[in-house]
Length: 495
Image (cartoon, rainbow, N blue to C red; front, side):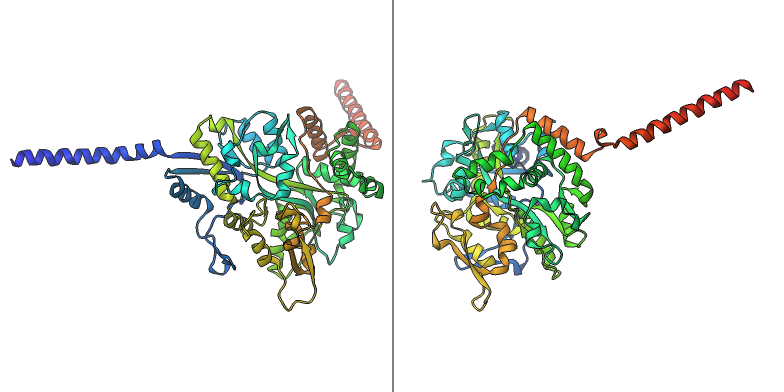
């Protein structure tokens, strides 16, 4: 009997060990792995300090855990299935494209508007499901809460007949302009793309080290007179005309842009991707061409040292940019579980409290206005609203972003007047600035090739720009060297 009991116990132990070893395999088989790739430092990582609680009247918002961990827990609690997020980052849109070209596989990525258009044009993007657009589903936070302003942009632009909204969901948006030191540069001087060529600030201005943003700025400077003329501004088709002019890729415009950028190159401190923020904070430069989200970060950091910077939007035009989520066919491979998890990821980040967390953490502006949920506007008032006893205040309308009726007075903030030129004006531009905002449209392969060649000539040595005097000097030097070498050989032969 003892032997039988011992055998049974041994069998149970073996069975237990077998099941323990099998459990991870069973769990892995049932687990959805979601491969996400987004910008560096572009999501709330949690670990907020106690003094960082956002205490809204509707309830506190606090980032205790990373957004990735919270999503994994929420997905399991909501859908009863485990999802594991493999989160990766990239530094530029071109970096992401190169990663995909070299074979990296992701299920969902978050590039900027022109890269979304490129991926759509190359048929790499999977369409969002019909269920994603079901407004009766309370978990579809994106479609229920995306800003009407952003939604209209997505619905009225297309690639090969497919509107953006069918394949992309906005994450963050903003405009471009100059962060500047108001003690050195006036608002008028900073409110034009021609600041880049202003000799009063030689070697004190930085611009973006990428062809798309800097090409846009150069076109704005070159077309200053046209874009600011009353006839152009008051034309009934102003918005479409502006988009056409700012996306001019005619050979003449490309040649003018190359000449312009090469001409102002020595007036600039540098072309930069990320160092401009630090250069502004330390006072190394007096103006920096910046995305509004990074502008907010720069102003916030400088303010901690009682150093105040401002943000100005060029009068010619500004670029309205957005970063958005798209699902990749190569990653999803028509797997319905992966697509469900990817769309749930978008919706989770679009939940108003999570949109607030991400905005607070990274400084950029969410494409989510909240719909019937008022926490986004409440957060905006919490962040920028004037104190009751403040005197120098102004009314600031942001209805264009929150409602279909842009004139809705329920969405008007009372704010300190200085905020019009600082963080608030950068995060939520005024209706006047929004009117002159234009998108950068997709350049086809041929156009991109020509513009990229132009950019290489701007950033590197261009043999065409060598002065004639230098050529003459080089010819004389080489001729002289040749003469000396020939004479040296002749002397050797005589000896």
